[in-house]
Image (cartoon, rainbow, N blue to C red; front, top):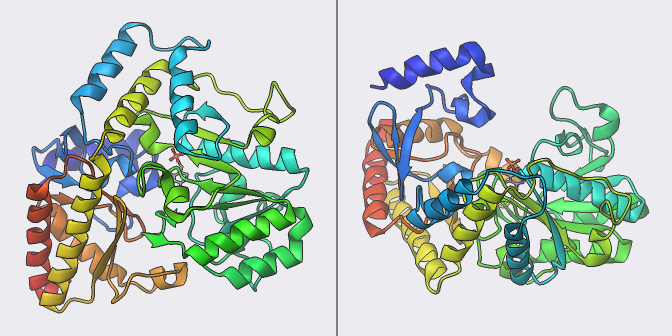
Length: 429
Ligand SMILES: *Cc1c(COP(=O)(O)O)cnc(C)c1O
């Protein structure tokens, strides 16, 4: 029973469209009404009706050290006590950018912004300004924030330029974006054959986490690097989700491939609004006021947000953090796979680093089409049963899950036991 959440959801809908400030929070994909959260601590969140959940959403990725980590809170408190924002440079911005440049080998310089959307939007503008070209390539099922030229789906027929996937996006804008199937190297090569000398940039989630979880094949990313280099197109790895998540050095370290520009967000803000885009100095020097590509932000590099990001990176960069985090994630996925097998349920789970996917099909998907073939109704029943039992998975079959450094064997085993009990009831799945 969730009387307080339900009352608050009804009230929220009178003043906020659908009651939420980001669509997936509204639970439309899974039905029912969202839980309003009162607080979080470590791997847990509590809703306003007093229920406790093991949290695998983690604010959609950022809370990699768990909720309300004492060191992060102390750093935030200290920064806040010295003033919230100045709109003038502060040392903390240099510290965060230096940290990012030290982690990502191809990152000579970076700019800080306040969201992942701003990071990808700015990186695209920069790639266009740098190359003097207009067209971009994105991949089906990848999400890069909600800038106009990225809210695009494939047109009908292969290799046509895209159509808006949101009303309000001008067809002329969407028409500058070519949408190619994920992990389809031949289609990518064809796209370059068709439009090669007009392509400013290719943007990709090197491990896709916005269509559930789909890892890129190494060959796909290698071919992408090769094709961009040959055509003089800027390769942008959108690591807003994967940065500090799939590997201490991001997906680019996991695959050993260096992009020209990288976009970051989520973990680097530790729960505060932070994004970044950076890369090759010869490209970054096109940003205003050094160059002609305009980009700005009143709250960019906000000192309190910098403090949260720096404290979070301090924790994840300690010896052993990722070993333990990846071990927990691996344990979770292995436990869920074993339970599904034992109970004869058509389900599997798969992890890359500390991101995981849950799929109601027999093998992990490799494409958007395979993701769409998963049993969505089975997921929705599973989701609600897990939520009732105190396990908070993402409220959609098309989102990745996340584990934090505070998810210990206790929480992982509890989660596996909850899922095993659900799998054991044939009606539940
Ligand atoms: C979350 C996300 C974004 C958008 O970031 P916001 O901070 O929500 O604007 C962009 N790209 C990827 C890969 C993401 O996962």
